[in-house]
Image (cartoon, rainbow, N blue to C red):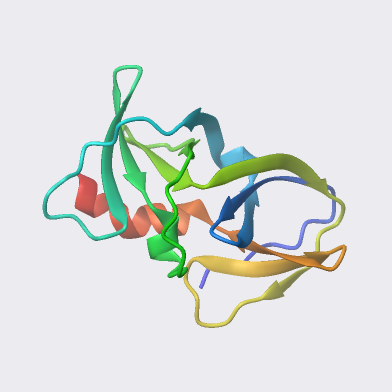
Length: 146
């Protein structure tokens, strides 16, 4: 399980929807957000890897995080979050909808046990948001797309 460091200052996160659940991740990990376009399926990849997408001449591996996080919803994704990565291959997540960039003031998270992808739960205004770490997901599936 990855751990979220409790920031002492404000933290900007990108909030998005998968099915009926709200998720967030640090905005520092995000390179850009694009509309979902044609994704070419790839043979012999894990079920979470939807396929590849051409993004301005760059081959981008697309992962369906609903399959990673094991949500029951299988709605079609509308947007792709492209992540800033140190490797040569870009990767993205197919999400239902990106909501907003939000500044969390001194966020406190409740840890989540036995989940390698969901690092914690942020509670505010009576709503729960699952905080996820895209690096954990990328590490899990990068071998399958190389």
